[in-house]
Length: 143
Image (cartoon, rainbow, N blue to C red; front, side, top):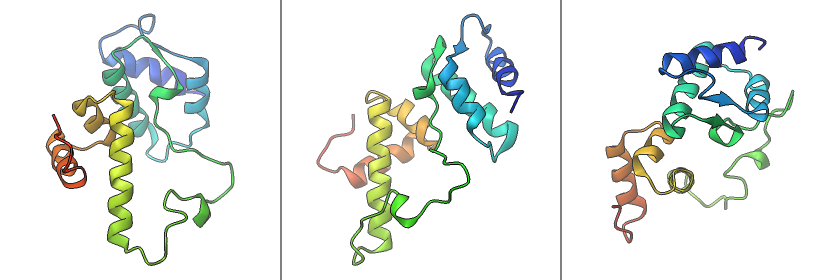
């Protein structure tokens, strides 16, 4: 955890920019240090690369990093999950589709409607995003 700031600087440097042009806010660094990084250094590198590409550099704050909320030593309960409160008559397929549509809407909002950025945030191809938009939002013309 002590190496995260140095690793982030290194990964930013790999993108071809100095750390004086692109840097982390104190809150973002605090958030990155608190995250356990189950994917280890590779996960951190991928996250920094994605954030750098989507933000274009500058000051990277905590809103740039989409890390799942963590509660120390607490396991999520059923009520903590995003599908909590679903009617038990809801099928698994319908629940998955509803969650997927919600995640797509959130990514589009974060990317200010830019589908390429939203696809990158979701870690799917643009083609897959277009397909899912057509599936979940047929009344909207995804342009």
